[in-house]
Image (cartoon, rainbow, N blue to C red; front, side, top):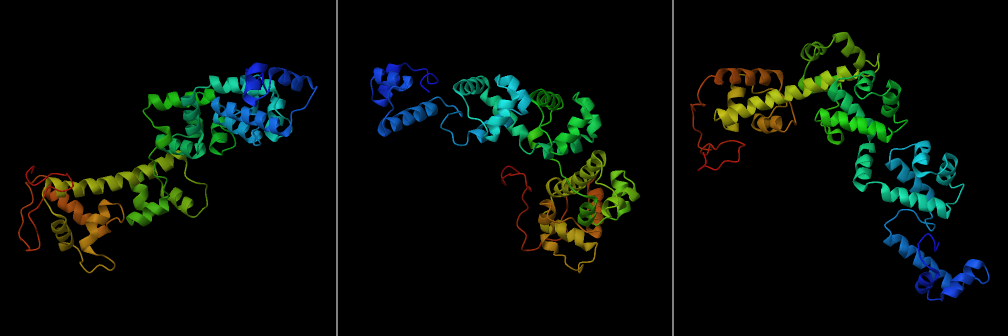
Length: 349
């Protein structure tokens, strides 16, 4: 313990309020420390461990879990961790299972490894490891690549990708670096990919589409969609899921861009736009509240029904080559129109 702390007998004695000769006699087994001195020794060791900013200590009752957590944070299996720490794989296994106690030499090796491991790198690796299967799944959907295709992209075998997706294994540091290089090259934020994972049935229900509508929009086959929804086939491939996610986002983006165009560029107020839309459709459509439609659409809370979609498209086509909207009425409830959603003041306009 004293050697681990790199202290002389005199220095250690000062921490425990005993002489150097007394420490020598303790170490030679000639005498045993009293309960009071023993507690002072433990406190001295504990304080030294805290000041050393280390995770590894003889006094750690959860040493097996501490070691396992440290190894997993480095994304290493026991064999690779053994090579890096210069501790045998069998000993690593015994330490993590609690079947062996760490020696002074092992603690020293672990602290040296901890010291030489870049803190930022550990945090980065830990972040990548967190929810890794789900992040990898989103990446493949984003790219529209199969596991075998992606394996070729980062020069690993297909089996590794499959095992990562299933959560059976975590990638080694060398594999993580290949993944990082790929993401940097393609300007992809692996930890924060914004990919909508949505089923074909959910898309159809939200947009009011038939299976044929979705097939046409996403360049898919109707039988394939029917099989997914009837559970006759496994989930869509990553390429098919890519098409589903893309058409979902594109459909919403197209609607919202048209609404903002009419509001911001053509000078409609929300009340006027709702009025124009519902002038050409059935105002008494069950379950519809025209006065709240715009805000619901812009917040992606609700997608317009077919009649509303057609009306929005008609208004967009009608006004895209015309000047700003000319009001044919001026309800007393309407205030002077302000530039919409642009954060401009009346003087700015």
